[in-house]
Length: 417
Image (cartoon, rainbow, N blue to C red; front, top):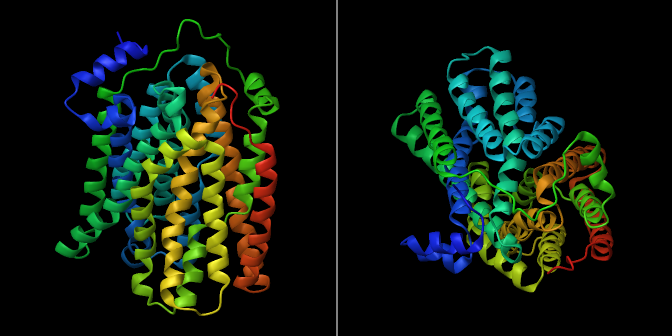
């Protein structure tokens, strides 16, 4: 019923009274997945923005309990489960169904959180369920995006998706703030609203997004754990894994950057949540332009330019007190970094992975980069605890510069492009 040939897709797009997708050369499927992620991210960010207050003030958890729960919520993408989801998606050709399952699991977790009460274990289980859902859905969803995109516009397609996803990161905290402003202490209302918005996201992907199909000319590869493990030896994919790991290890988390910014500017704790909001706004505005530039000028160039922005952030944060405006400029640079790297890396991987192993390869890349990001956070925290925060930044600056030099030598644009 659904075809992926470009003549059919062009006819479909012309039949839509919406000019922007055609101008961006992005299929309607990508836009539908983008709006799925928008509603899902609004749902998730509503929870994450009030989670500390909800757990510490409303449920009366102690800081240690909160620290463990926050670690589950922020870092438990469950690498092995993500790889298993990618493998199953490729082996069974069920990218959509597995992605729907991941979105549904995250949505149900919001409702489960509403009924857990103040018991620590059920709350931990609900948050873990949400992260499991994220680990399951990410690679199959990204595979659908790549299979519904022209090779020449992969970065633009991922940028459109990430841009719509970022709208959720902007709207979610504001919506939670408005609900609590209208009804103080009504955390249950926030949880119910979050569940309903997540349900809309599940409905969008379940009802409107078609299952992807591969072209008849595509070589059929039977996915298996052995085949997936051999992906790391592919000459075109291995450099991405190595570069992604090295760069992730030298990337300080947003939380550490925000903490150093607050320290440098002596800003009030009340404006701390606005740091993430400003970063998300810059990411939202720049995501699609960065994706289009990557497709036109070269994805490697834009990808490394994004890390150059992160390098500049480190430099600015190390400067002596030269004014708060310069320090706050790091928020914009952080948005530039995300716009130039997030979707572009997925596009680079999609361009060199065979269609039959697309979800598995993306899951492997996500797993490697996430593991090294966790290691990065632990390393930065250890350096900060054993010396000083700015000394940690110096170490990461040197590490990032070295990782960029190695990545520049490793990464190459695909010959087909």
